[in-house]
Length: 260
Image (cartoon, rainbow, N blue to C red):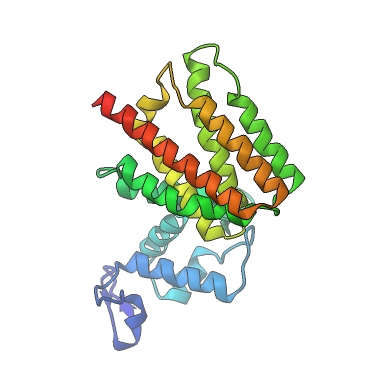
């Protein structure tokens, strides 16, 4: 593969890897970003390791300066690298966070957000399985963290501001369970649903309701779940969470209908 002085690529037969499976060519910076990912893997680089200098990357990937910089920017946006200026600066491998990845995925739904029913269909299918997997495998530290979260909303709020914080904390309880999941993909998908709920305009209106009727029921489900997790009762943990998700969905849909 070569580039003209104007930066226009001539793609040869040996560059098929730069194409998407469907045959649609990727933009050159995107293709270079993929090759950089391959380089990070092949060199077994880990978070904190420095990437080669820009000139070396240009030579390695036979790419113009602007193309390399755009590829680096794409990787930085993805959370895979970070840059630091000044003495000792440069580009370094980063550890992408699950939260960052969820935020990027959430933008896919920016103009066509999923409905509450869409979100709860996934929650009802996945969260009971997270609970079952965790039964008997939650550490004392994790249990203490869950209990601290419950204490945020186990009492009547003093004002609307505390009320909203409590509703978000109720969701945080489930996000913590997702983070503790021994199946990281299952936990990630559940966490993504929680993020979509937090960003949902309808859900935000419901959470701002000064007279919610679901708090005590939610606390009851969660204390029952905590007991099942401590005792290692996987079937009970699954059924309690399934009941909770069905209750939460019915409550949210009823509130949404009132909002119109």
